[in-house]
Length: 75
Image (cartoon, rainbow, N blue to C red; front, side):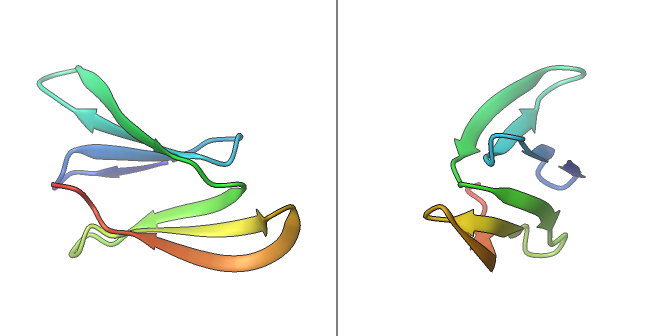
């Protein structure tokens, strides 16, 4: 789970394989923005300069893989 202070977003790799994207509002208010559906997310990292989200996959199409996917942030 990573918190990005610039965009005030939290990215969490879920056991289901998805990445939950959560926006921090005022104070302790949080809103789910979206869920990036992937088969098997292993690790999530965020570039603090570009705000790109990097995720590694363990499976794709039911087969083992070692794959990196990159998501561009929506402002």
